Image (cartoon, one colour):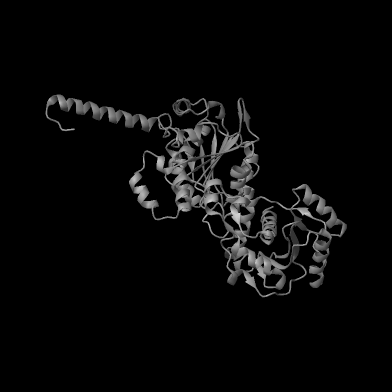
Amino acid sequence: MTITSGHDFAAFERLQAAAALIRAQRARYPLALARLWHRDPPRTSQRTAFTVDIAELLHAVLGGMGSGKTEGAIQVAAAMARGRNDPEVRAWAATNGFPLARIPPDPELIIISSPSHQLSATVLRPLLAKYLPPGTAMTYWTSPKDEAGARLPNGCKIRLMAGNQPLDQWQSMKAQFALLDEQHKYDRVDSVLQRVTRATWPGSTGWSLFSATPAQAMTDPDMAWMHERLEVQRLDGYRMVHIYGSDNPYLDRAARDRLLVGQDAARRAMEDRGTWYNPGGMVFERYDRRIHVAPATAIPHDWHRAGALDLGTAAPTAYLASAYDAGNDVLHVYAGYYDRNADPTVHARAIHAVHARHHEQRPDLILGDLQTPDAQEMSVKYADQGVHLAPADKAFSSGVGSVNDRLAVRPRGRFGYVGPGLVIHDTPDLQPLIGEIPTFSWKKNHVQMYGATSKSTQGADHACDALRYLCHYLWAATRR
């Protein structure tokens, strides 16, 4: 304002004093005065995402970059650590509409995790520190390599963990609440869900909050697993909501639009709205024949064998035989069978013949799709011919992620090997698989509108399904 008189100067001084008082109050009572941003529908709302209909077990808030998902999650975590009897918590809950019953009266342990200690030190800990009460003792707070901790005056302990910590460090803890910010491996998520269900208080049980921009949903098996639970299966006790960066009133919308305009539609949707990212094109997008298809070689007898069978009647039946090189962490698909004949007896005999050509017995483990009555009936006919099927895990998104994870070229195993985790032998009986993979693709518009399911794909997928069963079985087995 332009000061032209003593009256104007007095008004200016009053404004300055009021602003100074507000700053002092915010510094003294940061959580009590914290406000989650809100936009009325159809716009998204940070306040609604973090306060309305909190899931019983796992509440997931997916948001675009700059949407405020981490800020909102940290406010919730601070409130959970301070407890519902804290006056600042009660004021924050009343202002933002958070249900007090979901906050423990006497919190004991809160877990807050980032993918790495480096991210925890640079992102989560500075945000959290401003909402903790005076007298909080902090340890290793600025270390980018160590787990940090905090003990509040009420006795509650906060463990600031990292997703890359060993799994055994996640176990044997009872916690009232866990915040997992950004992508975490599925076994860490399962571990904290086990921990929080041990805690109860009047009106609620322990619960977890997951906040992320899902940048690798379809190429990372752990995020694909989350997508399966939240989006495809929609399990009881799980809930997912989105907040959009473009709805955040504190961001420069024009600058954000300039940043996003050059990206493809799927990537832009992920970065702005937190939608599950799928780049389109091939389902097994990391596949490269020059890398993943190799001349057939002899398979050592001590490698673990497994088979996978995609049952077909009108559609072809596909069988794949695999051997796992545990030392180098490489799955070899070395033989197969592909035929449109509808007779399970014919297929069972062909499976025996596949292994007879390799001078071996059929593997004890043969995974099959047994989820339909027709498949269960056919499995009896296979068993009559000595081919006993075990149920394959048919989780589609997670299975796709497991295959792409195997296709990745990176250091593996115990012997310094660098290369892909999946090798397909270039034999005549595996040509159907080699031919299917490049043509198995996404219906891009369908994926963006409805999410990634088997209905979002096009092209022959029979051998690809058998490959998915093998890779997802191995992914789960190597994490036990």
